[in-house]
Length: 380
Image 1: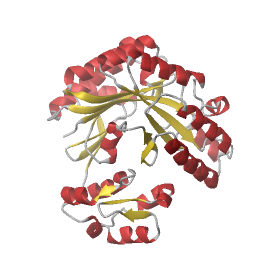
Image 2: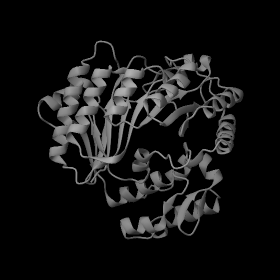
Image 3: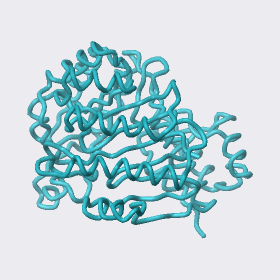
Image 4: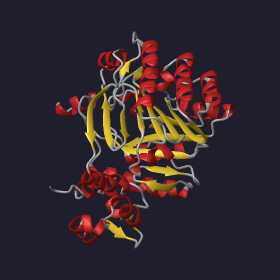
């Protein structure tokens, strides 16, 4: 049974041009009603799938959770505490947009148990911030970090992006220098991916989106690996880096292919071997809850074959890779027995390494992760 919880807050004051998450403009939305219905979903979920253990990780994402007022966000956090058993050493993360959380809001979060923030900086270049339609100034990142530490939240992660439209190598280098100056514990850094239903996708279709070439993006990634290492950040997942032991335990739930609860419009969950997806449109989500139904529009009973595939897709994202013992203990089969051709071929191509205890990506494999993962799709 899950020991992790994800809650989705789908409201934003401004929509980023790259974002394909379930989100809606904050203005004129039924926020209080949504939060009430989220609490009802929590109650229905706990009744249908009673927790067998205390939650060890909680993650409030979006959207922009801190676009809610202090009172509204307090309502949500309190509802979680009221209905779920929570471990005293829980890792409790809330996503924050720079400048969207004042001292009062941050203090409230800390008092209710939030002990980790994920701050969406993306870049420190003001022109690039405008190009991706972010609504903060570069200086607001440091202010948010300082305020967070002042109220007692010291486990701080910063989100960064590279491969942005017309982004130069120098701009990326300067942004990395800025983020390394901050007193933070974790960095998530992703290359831009153009997703459907985004402004950037429409611009790309019209030939109006200028992106850095693959070689430049590869150079950006390799430079980042070196620079973050020199600044004391341990590279533990393809796109994630942490100081000391400040890994994202919540994200490790996903990468270790463990189960988790999901609450809110568009949220996903994985409970008792079934992956479920909630309705994304607010009217459909809210209607289901009002009719005392769990708001699922899709349920997938994960077969043994799919579980083994997912173990490889997710586990290989970690720099330690997939444990041979863990794989056999979970599935009763040797990894080489299940994926003989894929493993042998990828090792021969220099994309995977066998360390005797784990199968993991090589340095070249890090740059071609998606190509590697595709090789672990089993045919019927």
